[in-house]
Length: 188
Image 1: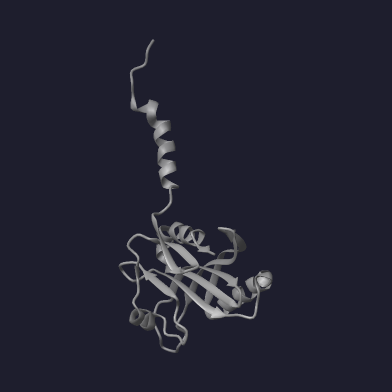
Image 2: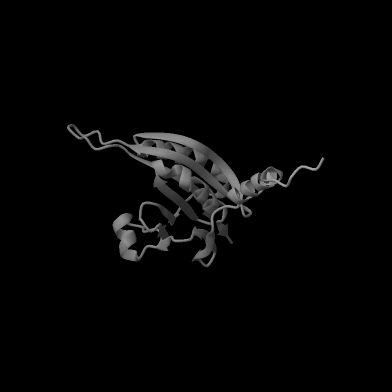
């Protein structure tokens, strides 16, 4: 007896196709940061102009580049600074940077910490959710929570820092994009 053609025949195929599309990854546009560094930047992210960088990242040494989503709540930045360490010091630096991050925030939940290879380059990688609580007396401000991935790489006497941050409540939306950005980094 022949069974009638039905949707159920295609259900397994549709599930496989849906799973493949879900893992296809976010759309990133290859962007040159310097002549030796490129990275995939999500569609819709725009580079901040120098005055925008100065306002959002007040520091003596401004980042090489900052890209922000249309709402301005999510950023990806690349910074460079001199270092006396070498890429043979990554295991030690992983501990130092982790401790530094823990001291910077009221609370830190590390999701991943690793030394990993991306496009033939080793990076120190820390993925975490940070919380800053206003502890001033009489303050009733809610804590600020952020989802962040930071990757560090040393080239010569320079340390390069790649940082992605988003509001913690938007972590499920941004985590796969942040991870894709970090695996798209190419340093020549």
